[in-house]
Length: 192
Ligand SMILES: [Mg+2]
Image (cartoon, protein in one colour):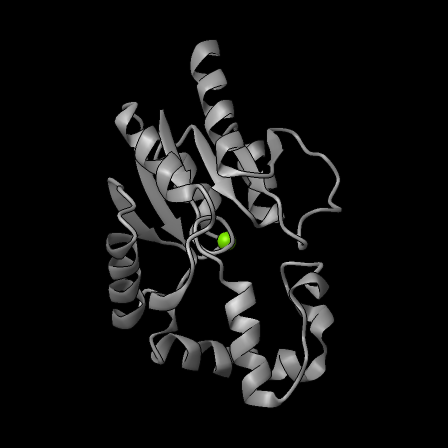
């Protein structure tokens, strides 16, 4: 099968380190658990105003290289690759030289195997995945998962505070760990 994997929120812990960085910059106390929607709008007007600038600084400072790997992701992606699946890493990160370079370095440093690495905005991602013939996507953004489900791509929605209270949707399956991702991918393989 062709499996597309999102990075931030799925393979890499992004929100926690970004909020730490943001809190240090602005002397705030924003918490991971407070991020109850992907937009992060609930963190307030100041956060909304500062986000883009701080996000760009976060990237420019090379913080992408320091992001922790989500438990089990390296092991499971390696196993899925060994099992013969095609692994496409598709991220909404900036495709600036630094964004691309640091993302490749991060994947290599953590020995995460993949066939292809693509940079696509959330709004372009579902169409891209459909055109690429992806069978399964692992994603933490509910809206993207729903759009993929509509296009008959099985979307495994990685459990996070920003997607936990969303209604069920066609083709979207909530997962709480990478081991669960692996079990579901194997089950889908049996059904095919
Ligand atoms: Mg993500």
